[in-house]
Image (tube, rainbow, N blue to C red; front, side, top):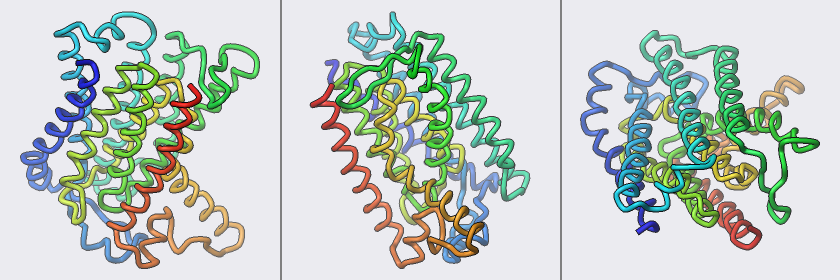
Length: 340
């Protein structure tokens, strides 16, 4: 029965996310919580103006309810998930990860609210958003440290102690890395279905990895995330009926961080999250090169817009970027299965 718990979590999460959209999207329309499309983006994106945003709330509900349903089912027959949550550091890490993702979502919700309700297109300032994200990240890492996390894993090396010596570098590096990843996932949400499709692949990869290392909590959380992404894609695939907004994209960023760190293998976010990383890197390179030379490397950044400007359809971008994620995910899974 234990092997079916993640599948149950995914199905419940999918159903909740998909069904919530039926009343929630018209509700957003009624409130006139429509997306404002900036002039800097591709001109054809203007036709999307007014599409309801803040749909990320659907994903949050799906993931939380899916995970809770998995816990209840496991408790009913004293499964491995219920046993895992009764002792040790795993429940601390799981709860800390969920709270971190919710904090990221709350920051995104504030940003969306200012954009949509207060009609300030840029939302929170970069300084405000950075301070809030760093505070959330510090709180998350401090919880992990106090909760007893003392090792991290490297492929073909094994567990490395992070409580003394060079291992202490793990914490400041993680602070920068988490900040980068959360914002990278946020930047990936630029065409219909892209962030959801990529995160679906990432979630499936980590579900298999967490199953391999016998981390039932993180396996169920990964499955719930994947199920919610599928449920949201039903509403967000082109032409999108709702956007996730920063509420959703920052929650996805917080979730992939929580799962990667929760299973003790954050280094795997580098290959598995390669698309996220390239999306953010394209922005950094574009800004740096333009300020240095006055010229652009890409037609537009993030890089998915470059491919749009080059004639790629949104569906093609989602497919190709997801396939790239899948290839790197398979490589990462093989590393865990053969080097763990």
